[in-house]
Image (cartoon, rainbow, N blue to C red; front, side, top):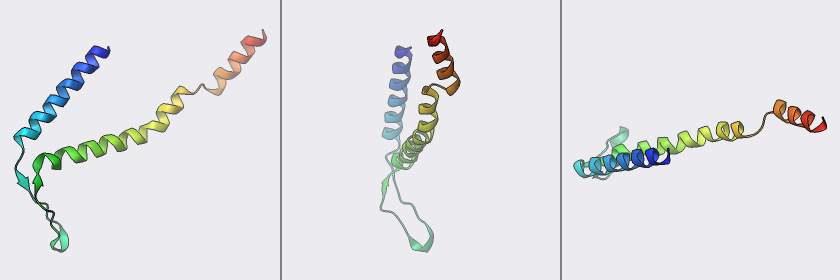
Length: 85
């Protein structure tokens, strides 16, 4: 299973690198009140929100993931009753 994850990771990484190489055009973002950014590569416009979303999604899922690893109250009571027997 770890080999499959490694292969998927390498594939996604290579896809991201090729995307960055193909999208090196400089872009400027314009907003309200005549606000503009300095020119930056287009691949940053695509990859930065992706990585921010990945980090925020991981942080949101962290409490649920840690709660699922804790034993439930029912299983603790059941274990205690088995030990008494």
